[in-house]
Length: 348
Ligand SMILES: NC(=O)C1=CN([C@@H]2O[C@H](COP(=O)(O)OP(=O)(O)OC[C@H]3O[C@@H](n4cnc5c(N)ncnc54)[C@H](OP(=O)(O)O)[C@@H]3O)[C@@H](O)[C@H]2O)C=CC1
Ligand SMILES: O=C(CO)COP(=O)(O)O
Ligand SMILES: [Zn+2]
Image 1 (cartoon, rainbow, N blue to C red):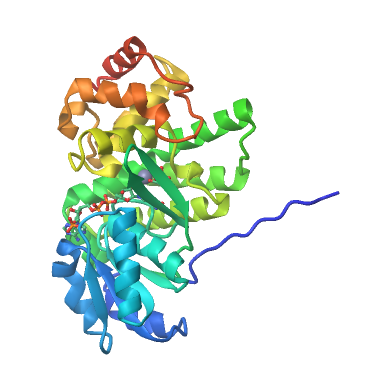
Image 2: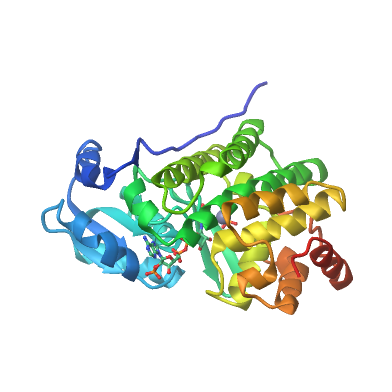
């Protein structure tokens, strides 16, 4: 008997393009949301675009956060309840969007995602990635009801945030390989559709790499479209598997070992070079990943990340412990093997 079923949650409106921030209030109206808007933001996004958001609403409440944690989520929940908020607006990078996403889930209210940087593919996804002690939780949460990604705003952000978004997408290649491996070895459920969409998103970004250049608003357009598409792949899969494999475990470990040193996307990109080498060996496709990262201006070495070689090796050899997610790292890579992979690929 056929008993399969799935529930795919996606945003209802995705506004992407030049000056669409001015249409935020219209996008909210169109969702028939009611009650007081509650803006969740962080210091820089607030300085850059907080005024433009507040000006579109009557009597908005807001909270500025510094980091993503379960405690911050609770602070947002308490503040939004105290303000009698009807819905949340997340204005910022990944930490703001993840925090608001989880808080809106706890509050059982809608939220609208307004990314200020094309730096990560959580802008649309139904996942929230929150660190806690020695581990990191990828928590299921409702995706945003709407996404308003203003390419004017995204293009004005520091260039490295955009290259981080590119690298987060390029890492989909190895994430999908890890997912397929886990399917073969551990019978982890695999979605052909989500896997293909994630891989195709990375291919399209790499094919358009020549149009990804600083100072071009078109770059933000190309990258933001890819981030949306990758987020949709995660929503279809019902997990971050299509966009997060061993290279993400490596990055999450770096976040613990050297917090704030490098951007999420840059760390996963460098991780991808090494994990592709582990997948396909010396003559494998790790050079393609390195060259794609290089072409968009993302780091390809430990040095460029500003992280010393021993920390890179520690992250590689311990990454498998951070979460119960089977990848090419298996039950752990030995220090010798990690050193060989990182040296051969020029990462260290
Ligand atoms: N849920 C999901 O599916 C996914 C979640 N993620 C998560 O997202 C996070 C990474 O996102 P990321 O955006 O890199 O990290 P942050 O949100 O920490 O943002 C990075 C930095 O950029 C600054 N910033 C944001 N917008 C601008 C702007 N327009 N101009 C200047 N500076 C700006 C922020 O300022 P300030 O310090 O003031 O905030 C911050 O210092 C990670 O925690 C990762 O795990 C990543 C991918 C998918
Ligand atoms: O960063 C992500 C996808 O790009 C989300 O993945 P995690 O579930 O590993 O946090
Ligand atoms: Zn990521």
